[in-house]
Amino acid sequence: MIEFLFVISFLINFVAISIAMPTIVDTYQRYSRGKLVICPEKKQQATVAVSPRIAAVSSVLIPKDIRIVKACSLWPEMDCCHRACTAQIR
Image (cartoon, rainbow, N blue to C red; front, side, top):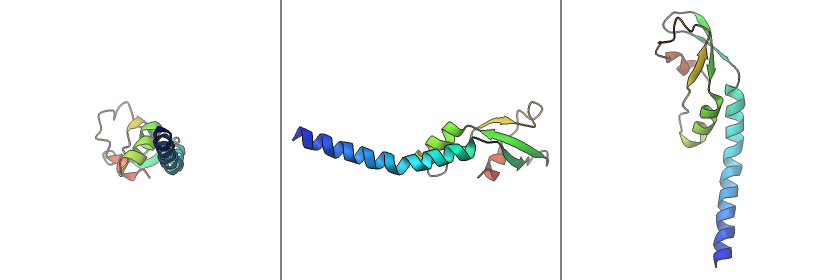
């Protein structure tokens, strides 16, 4: 009986990983490069770098992925911005 439960548990985990892995890899690759956005506060074009690890994991766990800005070409002078530009990142 224990072997049967182990096999069922293994199959469920394998299917879950098989479904989630392509989404994780695709999201990680998309967010690994900087994204061009228009800064809502300065109205200038900026290059924003997002944490690809957090975006990849959250794309599976949370329906709306969390985009944490780790760098911006307008920083350090705009370091205390509201990061409203993340809505433009796809």
